[in-house]
Length: 158
Image (cartoon, rainbow, N blue to C red):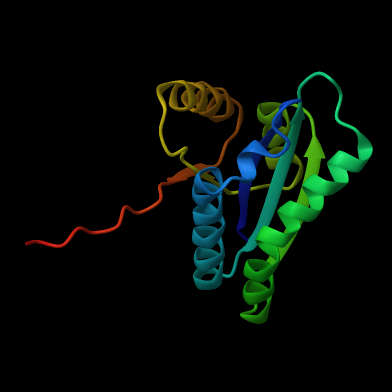
């Protein structure tokens, strides 16, 4: 059976409580989840959703981590419920640690056959960091990697 992993790096910065739950940051991730669910429906695969919480100093308080979990679950609940109603097996995980390390470990432990990641919207720093992360992950796993980009709205001709 095929196993699809969709993963997101949630970085915690002391002065910004949930930077990656802002709309522009969530679009790529939710697009990747949407793609994974619809693909799993067609090929009868299991979807694993992994959120990796990367804490930057000062250390993340336990109650703050619980807030992150609740907020993440709120964003994903409807998609997960719909997928399960359509017969797709969806599993949700949250862990703390280094994003690359956790994804590589998860792929090996759960025999993942496809990794789907949402591309960041824009910004040279974000894109360069994403490329480095992707390169490091790709060198350490043996599965297909699919990158999903949010579709831009079509413009109308005048």
